[in-house]
Image (tube, rainbow, N blue to C red; front, side):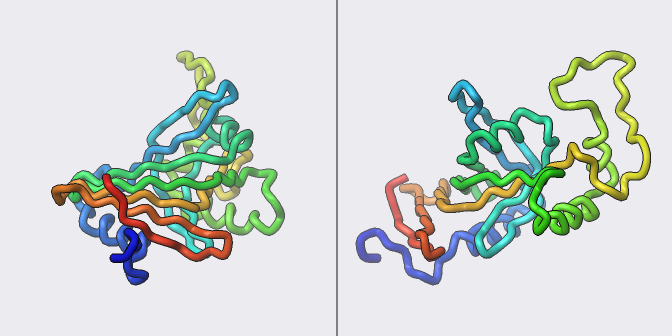
Length: 197
């Protein structure tokens, strides 16, 4: 490898697919940590369920409640990072990019996609969006039961896309550890560099 550049045939999406397959029996393989920045400039991190990897441009997809702090933080500062650790293969992927929350007020062109994501949600997952807003005081009278038909997504349902511009892959199995940084340029082309872990 010249100047730390990896062969063009190695793609982070291929690595990610292989890691997901290799960790198929690991229950935590679907959970990713998402980081945002709050209104005070403090970093915030939480674990969310990964839904899908969309391509062209590559985007990680999640869902959240529109009134959650993370949804508000994504609207105010769209830059963030996702971190995904695979326990069985001792690999970590960090995805830097821009969040795009798609709520009920999303553009007309995005509404069919948002509707499709809602339709594919399991019923138990849909019920979460009929609960009171995250962070509200919980009392014995707090109502968690959906009202009406769940066929249509409520205003609280938000699809979150993280458009990936940089991937930092770390493999802790070899000694010394292996680490590759993938960066996307303005033309959508990816460049990979092997760096010290």
